[in-house]
Structures are given as structure tokens and as C-alpha cells.
Length: 188
Image 1 (cartoon, rainbow, N blue to C red):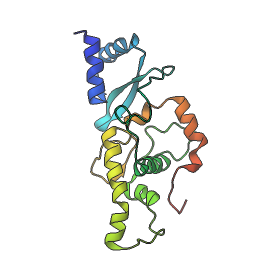
Image 2 (image 1 turned 180 degrees about the horizontal axis):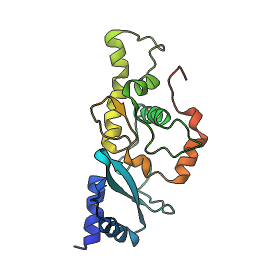
Image 3 (image 1 turned 90 degrees about the horizontal axis):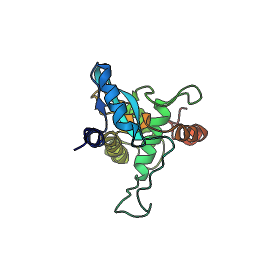
């Protein structure tokens, strides 16, 4: 098997490939993506380790089938979209001055509060409040597993993940234009 094809298959499977301190490892990855319309996006991993994510080149828009086809396309649930929007808004406080990744770390409870405000709705106390936020807690786990949010470090904080680092400039510009529509806590 072609070594470059093997590397790209591995990158797809593990999503984020950690890089050793040696510079030739990065050069090997650059060579692997050079001829297949892909690009490398550098990301920061826990412990100060560098890593890369392999993404499509900026001018390539692959088609993965018909959008409504459940065999090839799985849509995010409303709770996942709302949770990602809240995390993005809170972790990316100034869209005019920076790109979203890596953003800042925010409390998980702040993200949940932006999704399911305590002051709103009929459910307000005790077990009812936990039930109201459970879909958003599940969405946090799903978004972490998919790489849109960084893995849980056990510190109660939410961080943007490597998939956000791989967003194109066109996508980020679109998010900047719609930043005011992203969910936020009531105190904002």
C-alpha cells in the first residue's frame, strides 16, 4: 500500500495526528497531502503537543451524496446545533479580532445556561432543571466525540475542538456575519 494513502487513512480514522518535535514529520505529512487536494491544519493538543488535522483544500467542496439521503448524510440535532452555537459564542468573545480556534475555555455550566436558561420555561427547580439540560449535556458529549469541542479534561470547562480549527475562512466570515444570532446567556 502507498505510504501516503496509509497516512491519510490513519489521519481520517484518528482525526487529530500528534506530531513529534522533529520537523521532518510535518514535512512527511505535507508531502502526503500535496497531491490529493487536502491541506493540513495545525492544532494544539493537551500538554503543549502539536498536532495536525487533514482537511479538504479551500477550493474543494466534496459532494457526499444527496443531503436528504440518510444513508450518506446525518444531520445534527437542534440541541447539538444550539449547544455548538452557545459554545462558539462563549469561547469566541471577539469575532472581529480573531479566529475562533483555539478561543478561550468557558465553564460547561455557562454553555448549558445559554442553551437552557434557568429563568425561562416552566421547568425551574431540582430534577426538572437537570432534565431540561440533559439534551444539551448529551450534545456536549457528542460534539466532543466529533471533534467540534475538545475532549473533556475533567475540569468542567468547554474548549473549541480541532474541527473548528479546520473551518474555512468563508465559513468563519459567515459566522462573523451571524454572530449576533448565536445563543448567549441572558446576562449578555
